[in-house]
Amino acid sequence: MSDKRYNDKIEKLREPERVARYEMEWMSDICLDGINAKSVLDVGTGSGLFAEAFFKKGLEVAGADVNPDMIDAAKEFVPAGRFEIAPAEKMPFDDQSFDLVFMANVFHEVDDQVQTLLEAKRIARQRIAILEHPYKEQPFGPPMHHRLKSEQIRKFAKQTGLDIMKTIELTNVNLYLFDS
Image 1: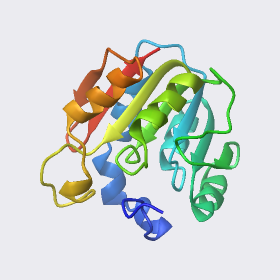
Image 2: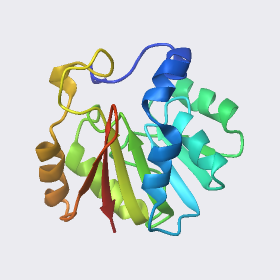
Image 3: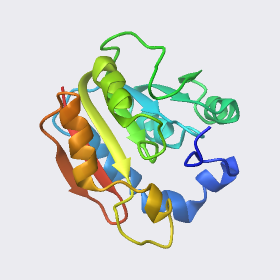
């Protein structure tokens, strides 16, 4: 298991000050802007925090995570969702099965970013969205040596044929969008 993976308490993922940093309403609106999304796959779903936000917007949600405890928590918070134990590099979902493939704070944790993007590209009908902390010191988020620079994400994307990347800088995190 990667030392980059989140292994702390589930409750910590839902602390109000942490949730507020993600500007959920604004962030999810940006992810959905310009596409007609009805479904979303939350890769590295954790406790289902982001799946829950998309569900509240009326989308059909699914999620995947390598940690079975996280999957159990996600099922509790979003009972209507479909949650599977799976790594980001090998998802148990059919080709083009979700309008949006969303990854929050997980892209820096995966073992193979290129394979993760290839899987996302395979599964996404309309858009891939990656939410990550910027490559700068912050009093929260992953340590600097785990963070990815925008240029690194762009390089991984180009290797998978995702040539057009839109970067949106939110207050505390960056959102990277790729349209299929």
